[in-house]
Length: 428
Image (cartoon, rainbow, N blue to C red; front, top):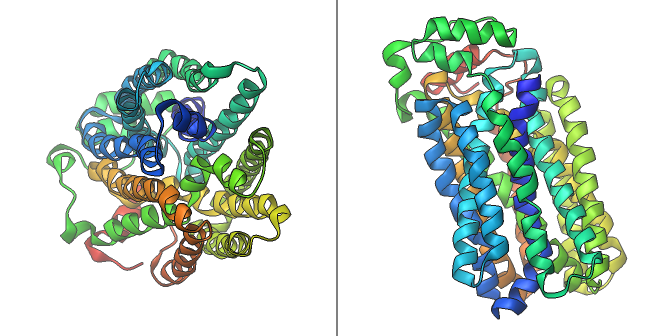
């Protein structure tokens, strides 16, 4: 449990660096004289980095082990936080946000894989769910930090201080991660049986029957892994087609567009972040009882309804007082379902030999859609503030059908059993 909690702190940094940008978008526009397209570039720069980070981390995680990669990521987070805070222009800002994205993308691959591999089947959902709980805790922490810094009256350097605050927890994580033990199943798959047994004893685990030797060099194969590949692509895409990260990144702008002041927007962002945290904790408590598939279905229905309401507010210009409740409803349903499920589900779909690369595939899909939607959001909103929310609502309606028809339940099964069940194009 201690190892799972420590590894999940990569999610805390993920959440902080994801949400902290929402508190500096207006300052960036003023400081660097940005157009809507320039703002979209500044916000989405990190997200293109996440794509590269997720893609690279899959191969690195399978080759070197997730634990070693986590150690490197802590220091990359520190460098990115300091660099963005000191940036003197849009180009340097985007480069350091790109580095931040590399760390976020890699974290989304290696941390869930590591936690999944050191957890018993009955506890795997809750343990991997710690990563998502840490993400939303980081998001809330970023919103709180932004609100507190905003009250300090720091003037022109306010946005720089907001970004620099992310470096503090990053430094703590970088110092602590070398204490993590290596994954027993990764060691076993590499044929290092003595080391695997030692790591398993340290973690209180029993070694499974995972293959070793040449199978550990196996490649992700469409013939062998078609079903988990399609599932990973689908859950990664729908996670972002909900609009979750675009809404989180531009939350203050959304409230401002509805007529709220800057300080009021900061406070309401904290309320959204708190709802996110509480709903994620509820989802974690339910995931190993209710299962992954029922949570995904309920969440898609709830987020769709909330997004329809937000669309109506911006389309009509009426009902501003309902914006916060509807966004809280959206966040709650998302966190209860997709937020709690995505990293768990991705970490369960693939065999040990290609697990990190499979996780990277789903994570990369998540980040491709994240970057594209986050870049497009301010441009679409400039043409009509209701337009992006209508698109998100439609995507969630489609997700209900896809999950109902094709998503299998993975609750309670061992990773080896799931690998056999989903390989060879098994449907369920």
